[in-house]
Image 1 (cartoon, rainbow, N blue to C red):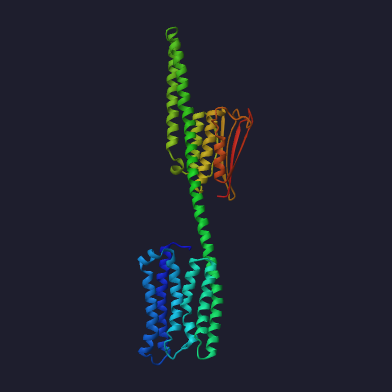
Image 2: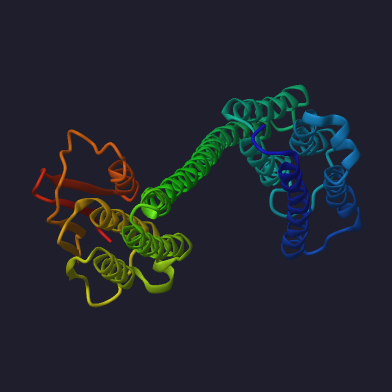
Length: 412
């Protein structure tokens, strides 16, 4: 069965109310088209059918029966709504009002909407073979009653058989499309659930990867600030201690340089911690964040700055903005700490088709075939960021000829 019990039970309850509503509509139609409705007609036909519908509605609200029967509950309810009205109409042939369909063929046609309700429930809850079994079962039941209890007029029997055949074909066609649509809907829901699971896994993986990259960046920042400062300071203090008794003046000069290095290292550490804590994209936007990034790097590295940015703030997705800023930040920091350059170039160009970022320097460069032993350049991390944002990262460098990092993202 396709649906869970609460869903199908809700459908069965709606079917019960529709059954009662249909009977009320029949009463109104016959009352309008028949001059006189006798109490006997109402008691034997309408009230009898209404009682059957009320029993069905009551069973749909009987929670104990649902728990007791389990999986057999829904099939039994479908049999009830499909078979009981047919049996009642054939075994207890009440007098019908002298209106439309007041004969044995009329009974078959009057039951058509009720059987359609049962058909829809079957096709909604079960695969196509169950629909075939339902349609053929109803047809065989009606034809069997005509053969076992033939009406007085042979033409009436022929009419009932003809109605049963036409109804069966209609049930098969309608039931096929309903069942096919429900199976496709179920397949789409399953595919959507799998896609959501994969998306959740991807989001978790991406989050962990982002955290890992930020940890690596934090490690590089602290290594380039705290570790370098402390290691240099330790060497200078060791030298100062060696000169302290031999040459106090030299020791005093070394001590002054150690203090200067300490202050510089403290400033760099504060800057690194502020960069790790701050959210420049959220506070400033991409353009201003890149401008402040480049100007701060040029000031720290004593670099000439060639900066070209759009005049207005850009409307980009957060993922693209984060990719551009982080790659620009990594490339700029590499220039400051490792390139030994005199000039820093940062250009960001945006048009209708592409977003292009370039960070270039005139420093010592490097060979792409031989990665730096220190591992500070973070080229792999920049490549991964570009791929996640749907962009392409190109890095050009030769020893002694500087380096260029170019990011291109199609579309906006």
